[in-house]
Image 1 (tube, rainbow, N blue to C red):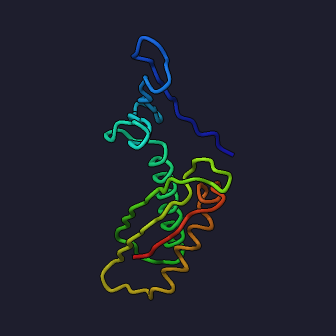
Image 2: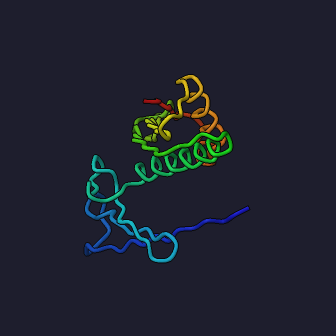
Length: 149
């Protein structure tokens, strides 16, 4: 199987590492040269202009789900013209009281070539198949909801 990696770099900018007195801002490098500024979620003191790990998790799930849906659609002969999603990561506490992403909601909107129609039940079945085969979804234990629009 594959090994896929990123590189992460954080550098303290404050004189000392003291609780609540330092920045979590860091850089994540993907492949050759693509970098993303990351930070804590805004509720935890992060810069809202930076990506946070919870958004990155929702993004990974949304991207994986879309790519799986497109692969299944191509095999089924469905002429997908566009795909849009709004993924929402919900923060909360587990039954044990630990903070976690407790649920991720996907809101996929699929458009097909003119003249192609599929009923909502069949589209919903395909979305659920995509979820079942998505690598990232298979990594997450529970808490993914697909809201087909």
